[in-house]
Image 1 (cartoon, helix red, strand yellow):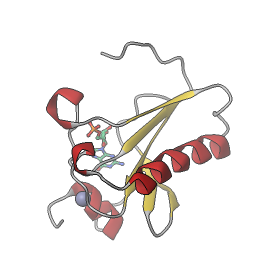
Image 2 (cartoon, rainbow, N blue to C red; image 1 turned 90 degrees about the vertical axis):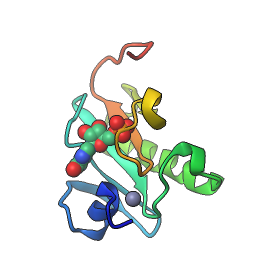
Image 3 (cartoon, helix red, strand yellow; image 1 turned 30 degrees about the horizontal axis):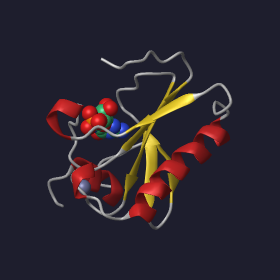
Image 4 (cartoon, rainbow, N blue to C red; image 1 turned 135 degrees about the horizontal axis):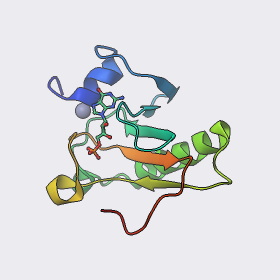
Length: 112
Ligand code: 5GP
Ligand code: ZN
């Protein structure tokens, strides 16, 4: 998608602090971090929202990639949160699906 911010990051047209990349997914630090650790895991394939996904293996890979990075970065034992916002009321602002992974502080519940 030529007008998609995250497709541009995948293509290298917009810089990002990449953490992990393979044929299916890319992980990079969130530019507006809401916690000491805050990164995003995205599929390389453009998918606009969670409502548009039918690939269970890909969704599983996003989640497992997040947990592996949390382990590698050393905050998995303290704890962290993974969340995917969907559409306007869910707080989605970039319409290329992405799993947020936040850690490094106490996260309140319920979220705002
Ligand atoms: P959403 O609100 O769609 O769930 O999350 C979008 C996230 O993308 C936000 O947390 C925002 O800070 C992040 N973001 C927006 N633009 C950029 C960018 O250009 N680079 C990076 N690394 N993150 C971005
Ligand atoms: Zn995209």
